[in-house]
Image 1 (cartoon, rainbow, N blue to C red):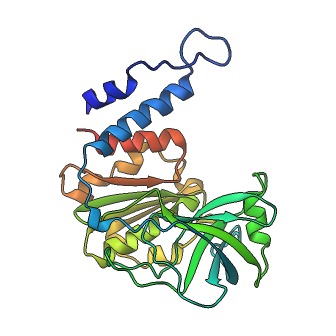
Image 2 (cartoon, rainbow, N blue to C red):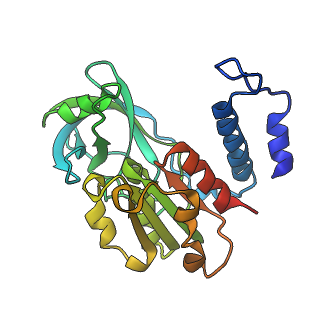
Length: 277
């Protein structure tokens, strides 16, 4: 892996600190170092083409037909969209998302998280609807507010589904999700269960009141799930998130982790710790 990382860095320099210090900018250095190592790891793994979803990238109009509040603080809603002609929609697989073209002109991406994803990687059934979950960000760019304000019957234009985060079932995997990041992870966990994988999930959030899909996750195998909240357990470090891994794996080395939705520094530490050779 070190040779691959060195190849990525050849001929590249990091910009100086924004405050005029002579050393390279710390944040950019951290991010580029993480990406170099991550892509080097991905480059060294084998990929089974039969698990790759077909490249379905089409623009279509969907109608909002369902709205469900997903957590106690009411800041996350799950929205259900169906085709205008009530027909079947293209199949999707874990990791896929839709690009929403909102009435205001904003464009936002949301992970598909409905329960109709198939455990059959090659020929999943065509779904009758798509579901996404959206957390309201009051001081954000306005996209989440607009999604929350959509009324039943509203028609929106979407592009996709597309997959920038594919998941191949098999072997063992540790899933680490924070907050709304669970939307991308949950379909993968469901597939891991359906395909009898050796899986474990660490789910973090600010409080139980803010964590969507908590009822479903707590109904899973309790020996495979850890739930942490900042208000009770404090902000997690990479060491705390990974302290149960020897119990999960019987002391064996972990080769795959799926991490979404954590603070940047914690995410990078977890990725490096899990993939350390």
